[in-house]
Image (cartoon, rainbow, N blue to C red; front, top):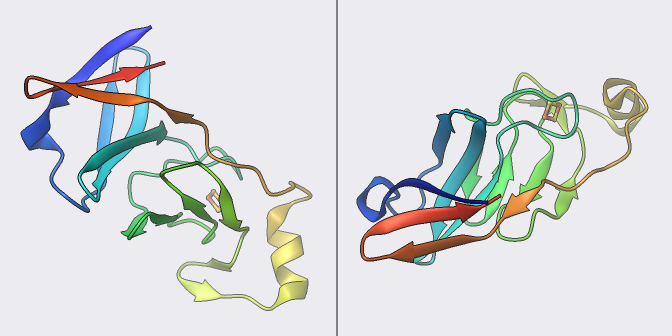
Length: 120
Ligand code: FES
């Protein structure tokens, strides 16, 4: 299903944008000129990714620090910390609550005539 998520101007380079609406919960960002979108909830504990930190294509979840490549969804690191503080390896396993590293669900994005669409 193809859904319009905004105008090109609403997705400036390197800024994470939350996209919500009827049956829509995404985070998206323009990285090196191209827009990428992913499900708006972290696969670790299904908490919102809208306050995540974006550096390059690396998205760091604000809750427990899991990192993902927004361009592919690939999990780069799993449960690195708590409240912005890094945790030692043994406690990371506790915070992970038995959940294995999981990628983000990503969606193809297209731009046409200044409009942005995502294929869900
Ligand atoms: S909810 Fe994102 S790392 Fe825990």
